[in-house]
Image (tube, rainbow, N blue to C red; front, side, top):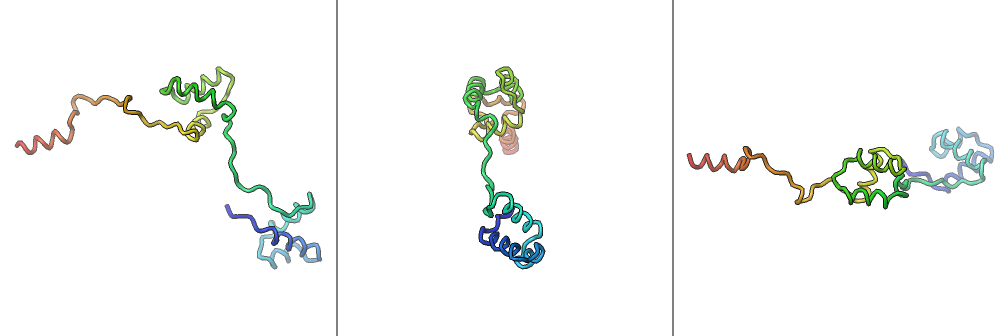
Length: 140
């Protein structure tokens, strides 16, 4: 998304239209789109301001109000799936989708990375893998 134009340009556009130019002439004069000039004028006529509105920013997560509750559930049972966490939250009166819960947990610093204590065991028939084949090739 492009950045908003400066306030001095907005003021010059409004002044040009108020001094008798048409909106199309003002748009051509300042190299703007006709719709942009229309927006500047409507904002000026509605509240008397030319300044741009809020641009960008961060929207707070829906679960921010229930953060402590979510953290307790996750730390108490770190192996729960997102669906199971959603069900437990729903039982406590917090209805949320799995995707919203996932975004909240990721933003809070929780990861899905396995810790060394949770490693899986290797299949016995594949133990050694390429190393075992290399040692067999050297022996022959």
